Length: 121
Image (tube, rainbow, N blue to C red; front, side):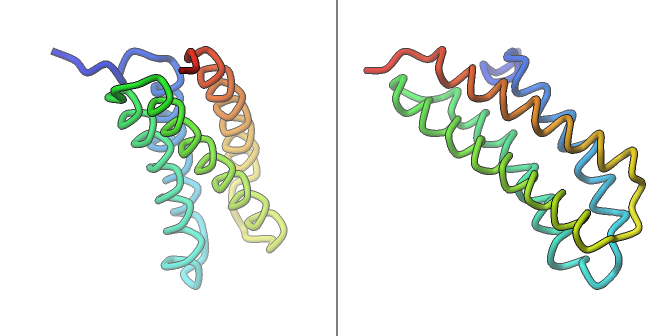
């Protein structure tokens, strides 16, 4: 038996970004960022998927929209982490960083559309 949050494409995309991309990118960061930027990226990426899941249990549409908004904020935080990695010139796989950025931008857009599709009350 599955949960409601597992069906939407936006949650599946969040899981793919989290497990396949964000964690791989965090592992490539230098040791000095192990407890800072790497950990922040992992927490923010995890927060996207977890807030989508938590929002699926919303008792009202407004509550669901609120949790999707939290997930959107976490996605923006991931994008900011990508910019910091680029700006600091850390030696990460440039293809992986581009993939991460593309994924989070697409996920951001899909979450925005998903939130707009939830009726307001």
